[in-house]
Length: 273
Image (cartoon, rainbow, N blue to C red; front, side):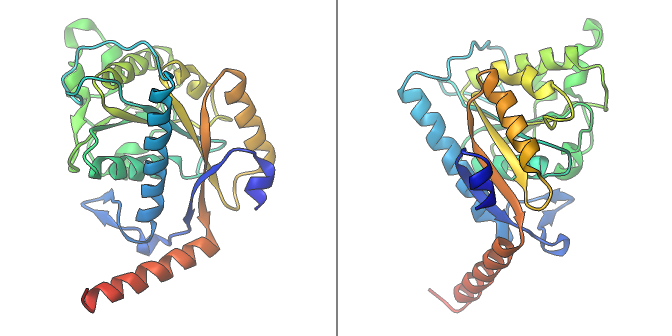
């Protein structure tokens, strides 16, 4: 109720607080399973609906270029979704990762892009070693990797990933390279999910908006403030961003309720059909 009163945007989903010991991992990677899985599947459903509605009314017409073979394949244009927040530590990277996994599990070729250039955490959440990154696309031409080397498959079917590189404050070339990579993937009908920096930390998120269709604002219960939220949403809307809604994470009551239903249905499933 506080979030609804503070911000007129729709609340896409509510993800309850999950204690560290209940957060499912596999080989060091956070995975879509357990008590929070259905919440992130709701986010996926909302994203698919919003993008399809945009197609029907002729929106989402960002200019895109072609060139890479991964991800992609079908003729058309995939949706580009940015996950951001007002401040660090509010759950945007976790939300981007799990939503990307939710999208990929229904057969949608999905590219997860690390665009938090100043404080990248995507590699740790995904449990991967850093290989060629977006930063390498800005280096000398003779040693520059191909885009297909930067966009690499993950352990999850249909899910690809592109990491930003080492933390840096010199981001102008990184933003340009990221915009090109994102437009290229979307032009090949991949759904792109971008994990970017918090809005009160830098303007990087705003600089990426020319290739973004929809923005999901991650709000953390007990940490995000009303003033920061209002200011961040205003900043996005002033430059014409389509903020599709807020994603409320970390609410204690919802966490207990979701854990109860998860445990209940897990037990029911063990008893038979």
